[in-house]
Amino acid sequence: MRRQGRQREGRLREGSEAAEVAGKADAKARMEIANANGTAADKKSEARRDAASDKRDADYAVAKRNAMCSRRSKTRCMDDAKATFGKS
Image: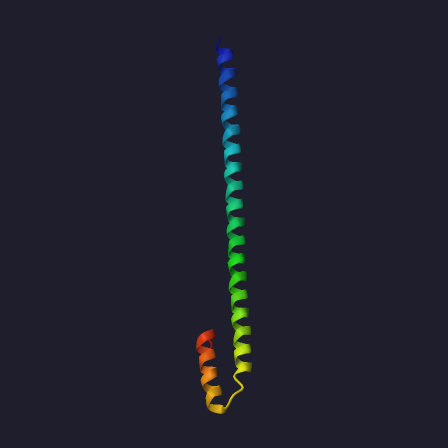
């Protein structure tokens, strides 16, 4: 009987060790997936910021071109465009 008990205990120990290793592997995989998703989100938001900045610059360039009026109104038009598009 003792021999069977020891064998059974050994199998249980091996099973629990395998479960522990599998749990660690799953946790590591979840962590890597979360990091990859975070990096992708960062890149996505950075791309959106860059696109918004490019659009703002293009709109400012158009407003600058359209401000071909008299000297006084051109200054006013440029001031308005700078205020609208966040230029200094």
